[in-house]
Length: 305
Ligand SMILES: NC(=O)C1=CN([C@@H]2O[C@H](COP(=O)(O)OP(=O)(O)OC[C@H]3O[C@@H](n4cnc5c(N)ncnc54)[C@H](OP(=O)(O)O)[C@@H]3O)[C@@H](O)[C@H]2O)C=CC1
Ligand SMILES: Nc1nc(=O)c2c([nH]1)NC[C@@H]1CN(c3ccc(C(=O)N[C@@H](CCC(=O)O)C(=O)O)cc3)C=[N+]21
Ligand SMILES: [Mg+2]
Image (cartoon, rainbow, N blue to C red):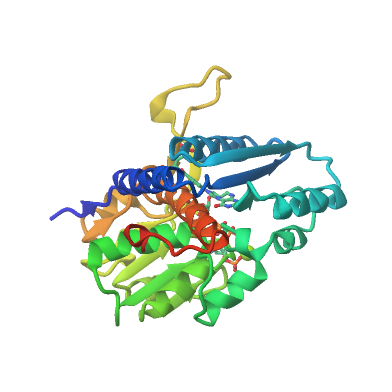
């Protein structure tokens, strides 16, 4: 038996099509157009790629995009002043500051400067606290995308054992909150966990978000587990030959030993084509949500998670 491969790209396309219809109905009803501002600092090539695909998806959905690129020498004061301008700009409903930020910038200060009702990443202290206490909040895009895939795959999650490997502010920790809220029994592993395999072996649901290629071995998986691989790791792929600069070509892999896991898991997300596209679709979803709240309007039922 071989595991079902969960097609995140297809699921994301479906969600983006619904968002696009919703946005066009807002325009027809004379309610205006949602707007998303994306702020990039410096010239990390991976960040530039992500920001470009976020902006492309935004425009394809009919959402207005505002893109701002700062040199990596920008001062914290200038960045904070810029966020404040976006906070008061009525055309901007959502604000995303791409991470990582250069070391001289206090990233928490920048995140917490974003107006909580425009914080479509859900990283602001107020949204984090709301999620942790069961109050309405923005939900970080990657965990929200993972939850949508899990619910489509498994239906009700109540009582299932979920092990999350990694507990960062942007993925692992909010994922744990969200699964707890969905009545899972949640186990969390991190760098100092003595036996991560022992936690993974108990899991009906595994969410791998450590950023370590091949960390999750197939013999760690409980037969029939549902595996969500969040990791995005660029590794050498000598089998693809050499690039122009003479170095081996590279490929993206997740944190799970995918080929071996296929024989044990019931369902698994691939990398690429799994969680990544859902992250982007959920960013658009959160932007529509922000727009509705700011317009004093209920979110359309067809977009409910
Ligand atoms: N698909 C998508 O949409 C997205 C993918 N990603 C990818 O997900 C991965 C995680 O991202 P992010 O959360 O930002 O990364 P961070 O580096 O911020 O966090 C990694 C987490 O994994 C833990 N960890 C590291 N090594 C191990 C190990 N050997 N065993 C168990 N736990 C370990 C760390 O523990 P400790 O807390 O003790 O340091 C930490 O909690 C990356 O590959 C990233 O590229 C990220 C965002 C979106
Ligand atoms: N403020 C902030 N919010 C974020 O949500 C945020 C961030 N900063 N910094 C970086 C991480 C990473 N992240 C990804 C989004 C999409 C893909 C994605 O679309 N991946 C494609 C492949 C892309 C490729 O080919 O490189 C896939 O998995 O199929 C990956 C990673 C969002 N992040
Ligand atoms: Mg660490």
